[in-house]
Length: 92
Image 1 (cartoon, rainbow, N blue to C red):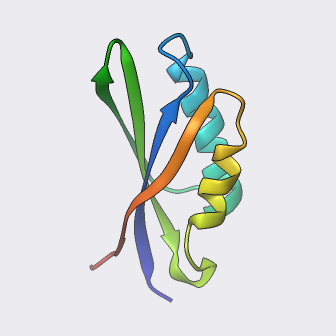
Image 2 (cartoon, rainbow, N blue to C red):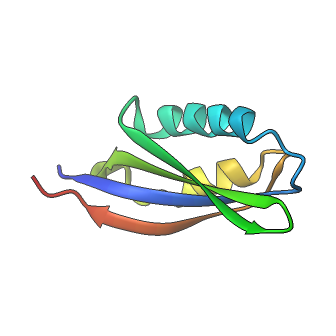
């Protein structure tokens, strides 16, 4: 099966959320869902000190869509919303 590259954008509940701790929790959830693999994290300033986290990760297409992972991350106490913003087939 081919590999897919997915991006999840996570909005924390407030500017006071520890983004490094949240990133660690999200990477653990990704590892449980897709296995250990490459990830890339980007912090995106939104407004008034609030920052979103985008995590790009590689997953096997056989797992289906990453929607269940976004649902799992949405359950985190410090997360206001988590959404899949991009899924692409990896070429190469």
